[in-house]
Length: 113
Image (cartoon, rainbow, N blue to C red; front, side):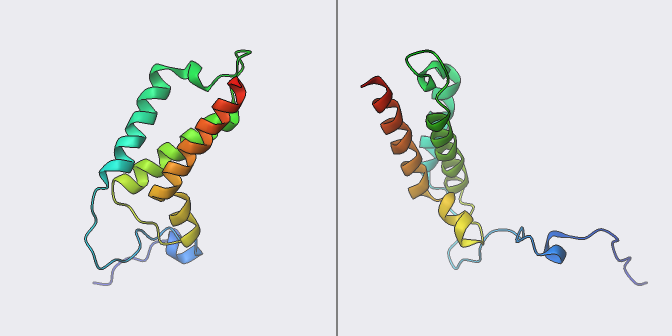
């Protein structure tokens, strides 16, 4: 019996590049430092959302965006996922996690100075 062909296009059919992690010779491994940093950012923002506010009380969207980027990169890199596309791999790397935290810290420090 011949398998039924799907009438829906898959990610591979349309070329979206959503075809899983990059091939690697080493096994997928947990990276503890980015994962712990992502958890700390998540808990910190949840417990103290006012930390992302300007002195006037308005939300600072640039600092929030940098911290959320750092959190996302920390979770993706921390659980060992490695995207195939180079740009996405760079945006969600452990280095990007640290860069996001540093940028948010610099932004928040410049607001209080």
